[in-house]
Image (cartoon, rainbow, N blue to C red; front, top):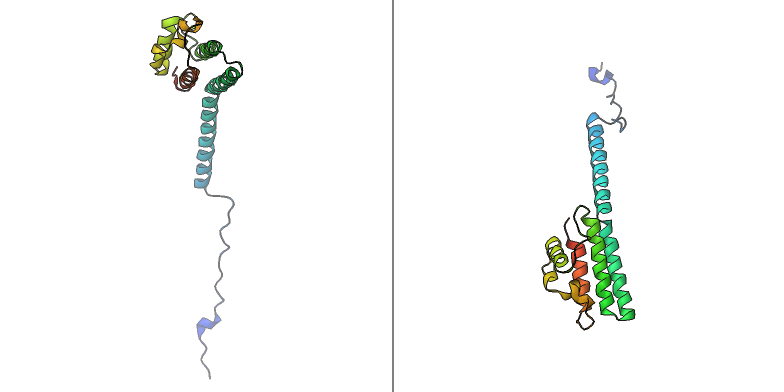
Length: 156
């Protein structure tokens, strides 16, 4: 007689069902909540920063348009006046609580030099009263570059 192995009478291994993807564990819910919150806060921050600095972008576009208009008409005094006007509008927008509208001449140049970290404004005649002098030499490239640099770098 043959001896049977008692282990042969056991049923085969029964494996449990594989772990499903849903519902996720509590850690994944916490991670998803933190991620969504951080993305929302980052979006709000970026939007507010963009909205706060939108006037700079518009002003830089206007400076480029002013340069293009100057190249058509070739009037350096008009170009200096338009750039100065643009700087005044940007300063009024950036510094609503200060008396920017009343500044002119040397005080205006000091304000531009101080707020934009651009001391070149103190020595430049185009932003002082020389823009009204028909015999004054006004280098348009310098005026344009100073205007762009102040619009980009001024700190309110």
